[in-house]
Image (tube, rainbow, N blue to C red; front, side, top):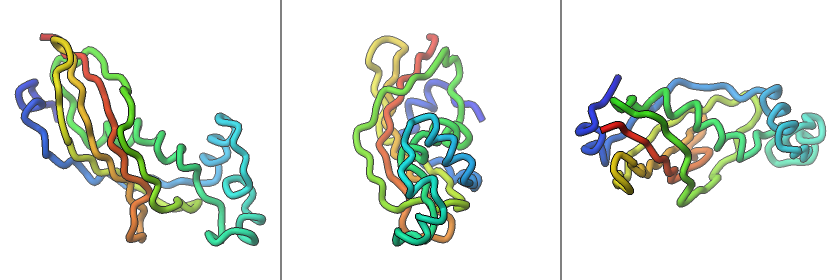
Length: 153
């Protein structure tokens, strides 16, 4: 689905998703540990995590779950006509509410909170993204994510 610039600017309050379920396996957790140099046992040592944590198993890094927004959110939000590029602009608020246990499935929902034109053709969008965990009451995280879209006029 593609939105016109007018429909994009009028999309504040719109909720997209939830998306498809996405499995977090130990291989992905290990690769993230390698990429970030974060080898805390709660992430990479299944036996020790089972014995020494209240989770009973390894859990995904919070920042792994957060980084997956880059792939999960574009699958649920429509494209905007004439967008040249989009960039991450930052985060206003982030809360990790529930750990994501290995082999859990997560999915994203997104609500457009605001859209502000910062310069001609440059739109700052604040989106509240919720990552839920299949079978859990509490979500893994809720974040107010900022993105800048460069739209050709």
